[in-house]
Structures are given as C-alpha cells and as structure tokens.
Amino acid sequence: MEMTAIETTGTIDKHNRIQLDRSLPIIGPKRVRLIILSPADDDWNEAEWLQAAAQNSAFDFLNDPAEDIYTLDDGKPLHAAI
Image (cartoon, rainbow, N blue to C red; front, side, top):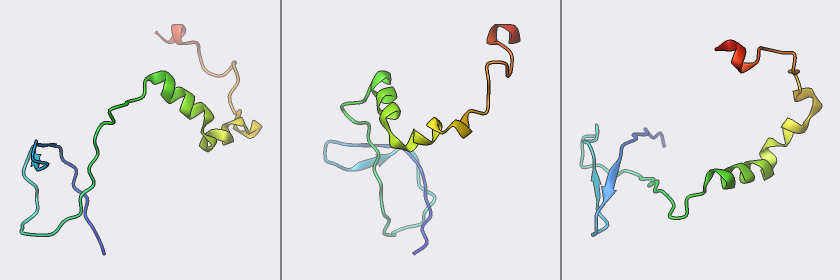
C-alpha cells in the first residue's frame, strides 16, 4: 500500500483527543495511520548523548585508519579565517 506522509503539530487534550495546529490537506472522511512523536519525560542531556554516541557501534568505522584523510596541516586555524 502506497502512503503519503504529512507532518504537522498538535496537542493531545485531557480527553486524549488530538487537536491539530492546522488543517490537513486531506479530504475525508478517510482512515489514516498515525505516528505520534512526543518528547520523553527523561530527555537526555548533552553529556548523555555524547556518551551514547561514543559507545554506539554504528560509529566503529571511524576507527579505521582509511578514514584518517586529513592531517593537522590541512586547512587553516579558525582564528586565521576570521
């Protein structure tokens, strides 16, 4: 089944109903599939994100010597560019 994605924002009220911030470009009535993204109550701070990224095996390729394509002689120091 082919699906179209529409991103919008809204609020879930005290009766668990979604109030959208704007109208949808869909003519209804029509069944839809929803994905709700909500901020976690336990948001991570920057140090926790950095720790998680440092331990994530998805970045292991950066330890490959073939990825070391730059040296300290490449580019200019930031203070020289200003």
